[in-house]
Length: 169
Image (cartoon, rainbow, N blue to C red; front, side, top):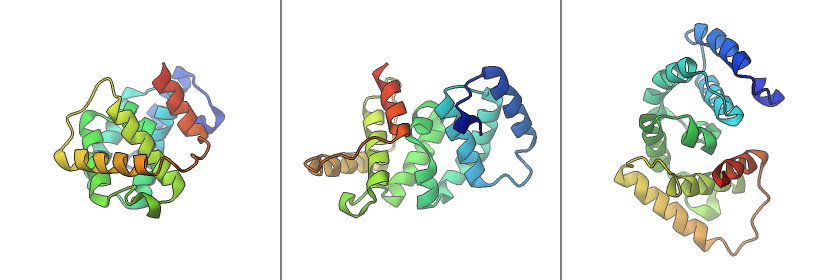
């Protein structure tokens, strides 16, 4: 609810983060971990103890994520919240699933999300050394996206506008 309300108070985030940290082991579902990280990315505030604990539990599970769960991770989360190890694990799973490929068979919102992620990774100012399979997937994603650019682009979602704002800073 912090994210939906747009509350960016660091003290409130710390209090809520500490409360959440106490409950991490109480049947915390995988989707809840993803939502916690997405909120930290969207609000651009951090509770380092919470994000570290969530990533510690989530990174080993990236290899088991399904397509819908991979799509639930926002590009902003991948770029600004995940550690290098988490980013590599997530992107490896995306490459394994072939997310966004082929472009014509992918839902437009999902294709936009992964095109945006590819652009962010290419323009990243603190690049991560990515495995070859991930680099190949990103190259294929870019080439398919470039081939489809003749099509009128859809308007940006609020999340995509927020990411574009961050990239322009």
